Length: 322
Image (cartoon, rainbow, N blue to C red; front, top):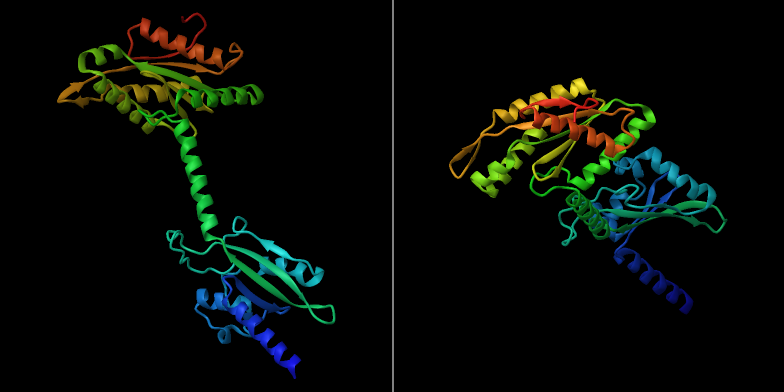
């Protein structure tokens, strides 16, 4: 009699623990019928235990990908081993809304899942336990950290004034593009350009006006870029553009479109209208350039030739143009 009472008490507190524990517990049979549905699952699904008992898991929760889950569960039933799923592999198994106060911005509950075999007295696995952990806080914090790291990486390679790539990162891209040219013999061009008589702009209108001119040039540059083009502020009033899959003649089309747009611009600062022009030098990647520095120097030489011949123009590098 005492043993029966003790067994009943043990069963009672065991069931109480299952119902109140802050972890989801679902027991399914080999036909994926729900047999146990604890309090955690009731609270987050809005379905009571009697509403889910003996119901098919996939019919009750159609958001669960059936083929995928059957594959995951097959090793549990056949091989008697556990199966795991983390939120990074799949954000959730049951699409429950997130009610965490700290991470309230998350739409749904992120979950880690363990599927464990439940071995019967005959040694067979006739049931499996789905144990679900709410890891929304962990997932949200990791996502925030990754986002912050991406923002820091972006800041580390971005020029503050223009929001273009800074010189360091742009040169890294130039190195990679020249290596691509050397390996695959691709057609690619680099453009160097600067603002004509920029010192005069600063001396006449002030450095804040000069900064605004640089910003407006940067905006015009962005408007003319393709998705594959890579632009950067090389320093001061000088800019660089990498034009992948573009020969020198097509680079001229890009440069002349940009040059004419800037020539037509008028920057107003402190009620003063500022007009200016740019000069642009082009170098198509070629065997004469032994490395990316030579390639860049060729574009610089073409830019210098523009300066020597009146500015506000585009030139392609030619041997001896310096």
